[in-house]
Amino acid sequence: MIVYNHAFDLYHTIFRLLHFLNKFENETILEIERIRIWDFYLLFPSKIHEIRLKQNESVVRKIRKEFIKDSNNPYERITDSRKVFEKIKPYQLAALNCIASYGIIDKSLLNQQRISIINKKILTEFVGNFEELSPKERNVITLMTSHFNQVSLFGTEGLKNRTNLIESKYDA
Image (cartoon, rainbow, N blue to C red; front, side, top):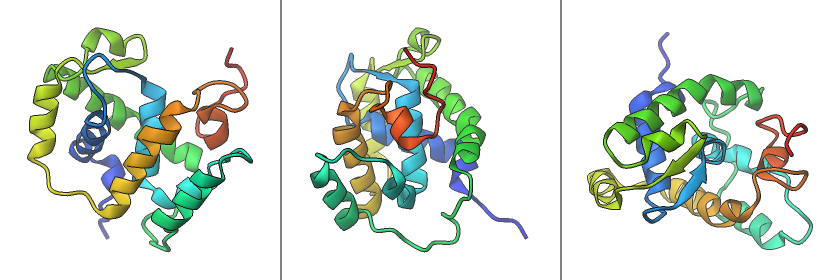
């Protein structure tokens, strides 16, 4: 039996990453690891409920409970999040290189593990040609690009540590 999983589809990865990037303006700089983490949670929204939140983030806890329902979709069930996160890495990096080849993001910054939007007009045109996202997908993108964009990537309170998708104990 052949089963399709959009996690391993380069074109779907480009589609997802463009939606994240469209939330930002020209010259915005993002870390590659941050957008990779966001993409993982867009692929597997039920895993958002496993992100460790601080005590004072009760509003975020309420938002994710209300707007990103935990589903029992068997295709979203994964046993080892870290392993799946590493398996999708080549697709994410290839998608970023493809997006850079269209002149949407700065190709030279990719080597520095950074993403910088250089042409918002082309980005908006691409995203404008896509179909509408589902409400759940829109909610995940909004939560990730608003609250989790404010959280540091590094440290004990950082996004890498909270999600446990990437090793963080050796970060500065």
